[in-house]
Length: 356
Image (cartoon, rainbow, N blue to C red):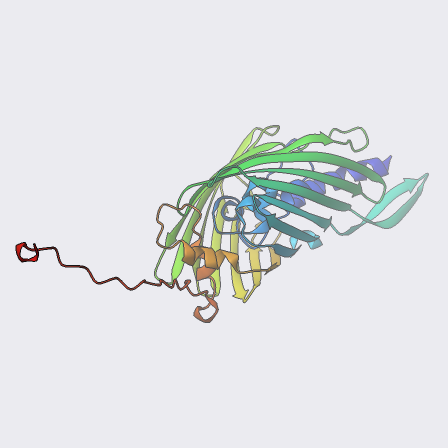
């Protein structure tokens, strides 16, 4: 039937539309959700504290000091739209994170023959519903572990539906001050079929590293990562840089060994505990896409930790980035330590020969 051929075409359209990293694996929604900050930075740099990093490596959220709430919105490629919410709640050595996202590829007109008559109907090409729950644990002073469980449902042309269940496991290490390592296994699980076609999960391994250089009133964050798709047998290296001073930061990223969508240009502005981000992702074949994020941080714990540990160069958990992002009027002052000295008693002179 014509409708079945259209469904297959819609599946291919959604796959190509959502990402440049296409191959034999499907469920592009599992790789679609990103923020105004380049992936290598959010998944590999300590002190960055961007919630979308846990979608690449669940252990990243264990390095967060603050409760955070993030809204994500993206639009651009062929009228597709994405929206999502992420939340993390640190508590002692544990952190609990979760979120929900929705991705709509827009509408197209469907044509089919009923005998000799040509019929048509406008249908939604593809809808995706995504949910995640994640837990992080601080194994040592500098090593974090994380586990995520993700569920996904996709509906094609308002007719065919399939679901998938996947899990991520990762480790995030900060062995030296301002230097971090990231390692994660992504999307291991079970994916459903569309009609009779297999739609395997995009299982992959991600490894990255990040380094923050502290300047007088600013910082430079460098990140490099590599993502290896197991089923597609493709490897995608990527590199990113972020420059920040006061309330403003700018980040750039580039993914190698990809076609069409490989460049990221983003910026973030801090308003007290709010962080507003915007990124533009250009594409030669599909036009550009705009991505907007809004993050609320419930407390300024990270800034206080920075000042409390400034004199300890051996402490790997010092995070200058969160404090440098804030204007001087909003920065935390170093704690004042008051020392009380007891008055010393007058010393007795040592005895001399005349005293005997």
